Image (cartoon, rainbow, N blue to C red; front, top):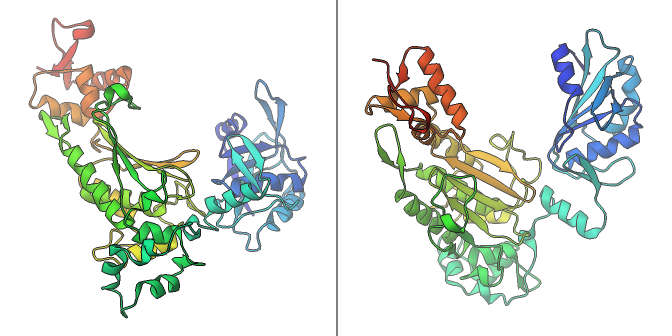
Length: 458
């Protein structure tokens, strides 16, 4: 087991932790079996940290006290019980923390999000929601957890529809022309497990139906919105037109959505350091992020993919949580296909949208970096994953202001916020103050209050 000496400042940070979706504090007297419930909840959700050896003196005022294990052996029962939860023991790491002036060791458990469902010692699965651990009760709840973990996939469910919905479509006929060896539609679809018990599966419909949205409504289309605002959220007043709905098979859906999104973006103008600039995002970024959303979304969730185009960013939100062991931290390094049949077969189409299987998001990030734009931001919400692509330069706010003043006489706070992406007036004001202290800019004489502005130092 690892040991680490921490500073008093780090100790205080632990004692003042706000327990949430990713962090929990426990006293060392917690029963080992009870502790496994918390371990199960983190492993089955998004992972997190548990600190054992912190007493709650006053829960309302969050007054806590360090009371650690006397030695490592005192924590053996806890570690042995946690070890039993998974045969390989790769669902956690343990570090014993000590601090000068404090008694004993606080045990820090880092719990990883696992591919499989981790049961507690009592044979029950738990999930984490906020600062709570919730028991997974009932067949439906367990089925939902299996879908979230990627243990089962909705792509294998059958739909009550005739098989000629996919066996006699133009998509399957065109597709099989390029398949080696040549095959007839129905036998090939059955061999690929896209027809089961004489019914098409979800994957079969999405890939080869002429209009899968007719049989999978509210869960297989893409909605595109254009909001004329830079605010955090759009509303009816800023909506440029009624939302567009993109439909079609998986292959056509991806290419049509990327094309329409790019067309709408090209009409946007943004104030830059030289004047009004046309906004453009790397085509690879848009393509890879939309492709990732379509191929890896959770089709069991009754919701469409949403693409929201703002004046300063594009948001792509796809239904379902991150599958398997994938987290925000490891998403660029790890691979896990929630819908493996769809991912594998769409790659067999001519000019497949997922040319480099498993490398899509890395390609998207790299394309943004080549243009000196900030990395896309990935956010896991309660039941969806949101990717935000901002048109924001990697240059510092100070560099952006000075570049703007190369071709303009002065700059106001509002203009500064628009070209740097800063939201707060005070934060922007501090940028100007730092440049002023360095002797690079000065206030424009005769302008104050709302009219105040800055110019290059004369």
